[in-house]
Length: 452
Image (tube, rainbow, N blue to C red):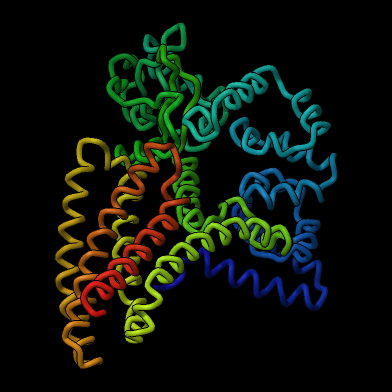
C-alpha cells in the first residue's frame, strides 16, 4: 500500500528540517515551515523530538499560532503553550472562532483567558459561552454558533442584499437556516437556489423543510454517522424546543472521524490519542507500566493453569511444544470477532435486536473453522510425533478453543458496552486471557484424561 500524499509530504518536510537543523540554517527552516498550512505544521511539530520542536516553534509566524494550537493533540499543545509568550498567546487566542477557542480554552493560562474574554464583543462572548456549556464530545460541543439565519417571509432579493452587506460568509456555508421570530428552526435555503431562482421568489416557497437537524446532546460519533448517511456539508444544531443554536460543518466531522480512529487503535494497546509521541521517557514509561502490569497478571493466570498440569507435561514433552498452537489460534480467531463487533458497536449497527443472531453466526464460523483447522493440525501432529491420539487430542482442543474464542469475541465487547466501558480499551486483554486459559486448560486437561 502506498503512503498518502500527506504522509509523503510530512516525511519530506522532516527530511528537509533535519538537514537544516543539523546545519543551523534557521532562516531556511523559518521560510519552509511558514509556507505550510497550520494543519501540516501541527503534524510536523508532533513528529519532532522535543528539542527540535522548541526550535521550530520559535520560528513560526505568530499569526499561525492559534490555528496550530487547535490542530495539535492535547499534550503537545500544553508544551507549546508553556513555551509561548503570554502576549502572543492572547493574540493567538483572540484570532480564533468561538468553536476553535473552546477547544483550547481550558489549556490556556488564567491571565490569558481573562484578557481574551475581556477583549471579546458581547456577541462573541455569548457564542463562546454557548459552545462551552455542552460536552465537547456532543453536537453542542462541536457546533459553531457563527451561522446565517433568515426569515421565511422575505424575497430572495432581500436575502441577496443582506449577504452583500455582510461582505463574507462563514466557512463551508452551503445553506442558510430559516427560522421564526423565536429562532426556532423551520428549514434551510440552499445557496444554489439563491443564485438560480427568481429574485422575486419568497424564501417560504423554495426552502427545504424536511432536512434533518442535530439534537444538541447527540454524541459526536453519531454526528459523524449522520453526515455520512445524508452526505451533508453542514447541518443545524437545535435544542429540545427546536431553537437553533449553531451549525456543524463537514471539516469538524472529519476531525471526529480521525479522532475516533486514533482512539480505537491506541486504546487497544492502552494508550491515549492525546499522548505526545516524544514525551519524556519517564512519563511514557509510567503510563505504559499500568497496562504492562495488567498484562503480567493475565500471563501469571495462564502460567498457573499450565502449572496445574506440570506432571502431565513432564510425561509427554510434546505437549509443551504444541501448547502455543491452540492458544494462538484461539487468540487470532477471537480477535477477528472482537474487531467485527467493536466496529459494529461504533457504527451503531449492533444492539439488542440483532446481537443474538450475530453471536450464533460467529459460533457457527468458529465451529466451521475449528473443524477445518483441527483436521489440518491433527494430521500434521500425528505425522510429526507418530501419535494419532495426540493428533486427535489437539484437534479436539482446537475446536473447543475456537468456539470459546468466537463466544468471547462477540460477548465481551457487548458486555463491556452495557457497563459503560470502552470495549477497545479492555476487550483485547480479557479476550487474550480467555483464549489462553481455555486453550491450555482444554489441551492439557484432555491430555491428562486420555494420555496419562
